[in-house]
Length: 355
Ligand SMILES: Nc1nc2c(c(=O)[nH]1)N[C@H]1C(S)=C(S)[C@@H](COP(=O)(O)O)O[C@H]1N2
Ligand SMILES: [Mo]
Image 1 (tube, rainbow, N blue to C red):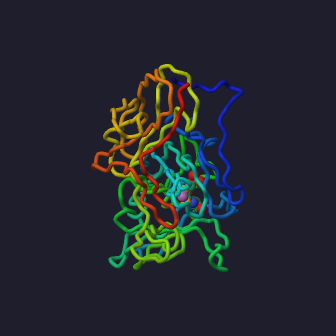
Image 2 (tube, rainbow, N blue to C red):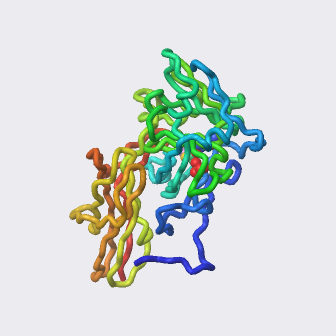
Image 3 (tube, rainbow, N blue to C red):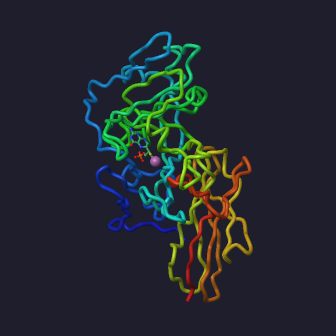
């Protein structure tokens, strides 16, 4: 069933908090591949920043041979790279963890996909060079505020190790879906790190600083760390690559259906290579069948899948979807619980009743 929305009935963002603004994409009602600005989820730690974009300049400083300040014109004139990329918040699906964890109670829509254009960071670094002591590159955002855990003012800043920063897919983006990046999504310049959870993709870049140690800012060393234990920090490790995952879009969880033939459909994605296959179970995991992939499987973008279901017998059904990526990762039956609730990727599960 291909649902198209009549013009007067359209999906909206799903509000989680308003200041700072956190709203999810209505992912179950999205049958396209390119999420428009209107339905692109919004995830912010602070209020939106204030700065005069007409005077916008991007400095690269720290452990470089030649510090340099780039103008937007210069950046626009350099060779560019365009990619279709999934952005997924590491807190996507957090509300499904059991026991429950604190933080934004994201459902399945802290996720979007679109076309990003920009210049690779390695292209910019050709102008500045890197000193031998360079270890990480810090991206500082224009937005700042007080965190609940301290009285200090912090900007949203995060770092990448040099290898990831100079990866030919790591870009300083200036366009989304062929238009300047919408303000709420990082105008005029935003880092895009394909394959990593979206906290890495720093919006409103203020400056880039090369350092010789591990960056310890709170959005790196306190948040966006997996803490496997509830009571202590042992075994912690940083959140990076997007786990293989899938979401059933239709039918909806707990939907009532008449007997009939249905097209179950959804999406699947991974930060590790491409999606290799998606399997579906109609009987709660006793038996599995292969889904049909309706879009080509590409690195960094989601695939759409569907499955024809002949729902001829009345009753309750548990429907599961399970994706596998080209590196052999498969969605687990249970999520890996962690104290801050990152990286949920258990087999997707809905229930429906046929009557
Ligand atoms: N400057 C800045 N960059 C940021 C954030 C932020 O709060 N400030 N949030 C991060 C997180 S956690 C996510 S999931 C994505 C959300 O991007 P979006 O609001 O464009 O969907 O941006 C990342 N980059
Ligand atoms: Mo996020």
